[in-house]
Length: 375
Image (tube, rainbow, N blue to C red):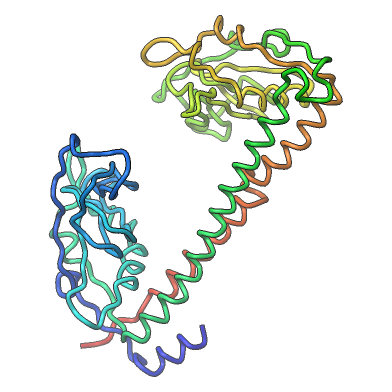
């Protein structure tokens, strides 16, 4: 940081020049690609989304290019580090002057991304007009300053990437041990011959009859989580459950990509609508064991209809292994540690990632805020 201060004092003690984006960049939209030309792997197709909308076998832009979403997530700023196809719903941003660093420009635009998103217009479909992009004002400090800022922010970014990769590895490790610990075929576990299999409703109470849906316009804002099929939908001023529960999606969002059910672990005072089954056992270890086991269950054969639904009759047909209680406690203890490391936002890797993200955003904002030089 001291090097940056020295550079600022040396090269721009009286502030920095600002220019509009059209003064320093070429800005244009990509070319529409027919969906029939999409393939499973290849060059990413970048449009108005946060991620690639597909893949193709050809590209129309080189790597290390800045894009801004025109439709969809209009205003989203991205840096594409591979060759790609720029679609018709994104702007391609390329510097046309020598004294601007491409990565510095990306960081500047990313830093004002919320503002850019606020410029989108439209009635039913919101979009970002080109004139709004052209007239964005950006700082142009000396190239030495730009390079030093890029070096600092790249260091933060690389560390974040390392943490995210570590989290992915930990999740795979967690899934491996979860599946291994929860496989009770004969001979695979020390207690294999002591495992009884029961229907889920013999182990947990299904409290669906206590649920109450409340339409959005009739909810009163409060502090109690209001749960639906895939998690918290709102916060309301009252509750109907007080305790610890497994919530399993009943209709709508009921099945994950790996065919496991959509589950939430909910504790405290909560409200649940009629889109999630409510499962309860006063023994937390037993309930936690069921929660982990359900993560390994393929429910594709019991999902019915459009939108997809797991009705209560089909829910009751799910079989759960019941090893001795001490074995359940041992398994839960191991998996709880993995779960905290992978998913707990108050500790473990998620907490570290969130802290580093905030740290990065703080320094990015500080580093990219320049006093404008008087003309």
